[in-house]
Amino acid sequence: DLHELRFAHKIVKEFAFNILGDTLRKTPVLFFLDGSLAVHGEREGDEALAVKIYREELKDFLALCAFKEIHVLGYISFSRSSQLINKLKTVLPKITQASSDRAFLQAVLKPGEGTVAYRALDTDSRVSCDTLEYYFLYLNTGYELVRLECPAFIAQDKKQLSLAVGLCL
Image (cartoon, rainbow, N blue to C red; front, side):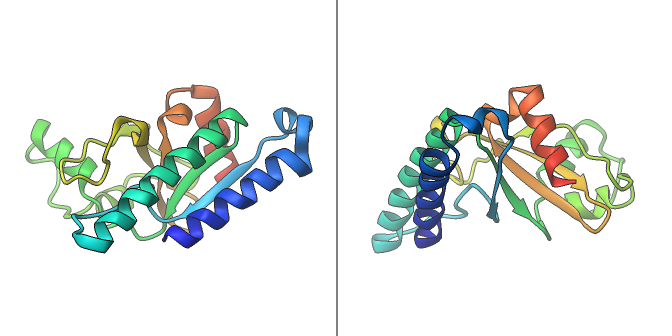
């Protein structure tokens, strides 16, 4: 939702610049966005314009977070994604009959364990441009199996990614 993103952006600006100032680099900060970092499906008319504005504001928000080294994660409790399982099936067709990543990984990951981060390779226009490139991983928090999505600047830095996932646990 655009209003939620604008509110999050405002909070991060206020938090990063006015409250923490220079101490931010010494204090790990994790900012959760409820849900995916990507917009699902095609839109038309006013909705298409709203999605375009949302993506531009998300790009600005993520740039601010990258500059201030604030960890940003999209947190999805009951993901219905099958990106990972579909990729596995192309390599090992008989590996599983699971219909979703979550169904497959619930039997595989123990509490505190997670997958590696995978680059999201969507073809359904969920990601509109390279600046919104994101990665995803799954984590068994002990309470639930969650899908975490993070921008490339976190996923491509092992220290940043490890810290972000550690803060989730």
